Length: 74
Image 1 (cartoon, one colour):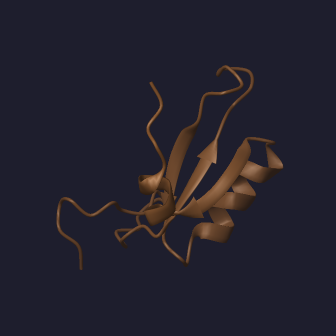
Image 2: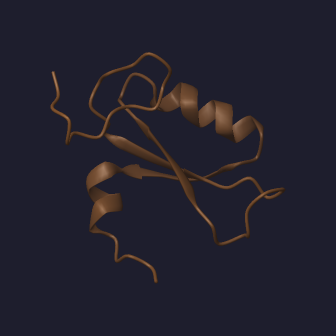
């Protein structure tokens, strides 16, 4: 169970708390340094990574806590 401040997995229909951040970029739409993010629970991390990976979009997979501790850009 999670409250409204808990990041939730991006997988369709999943309401589980996110543990992972999948950083991605669509080179046809985004500048090379731009990073969009999907959140994933343990169960959906591999599926979402593969979805982005086969399209060549996946750039990085890190834990949510590691992502949040990175210095913000800008």
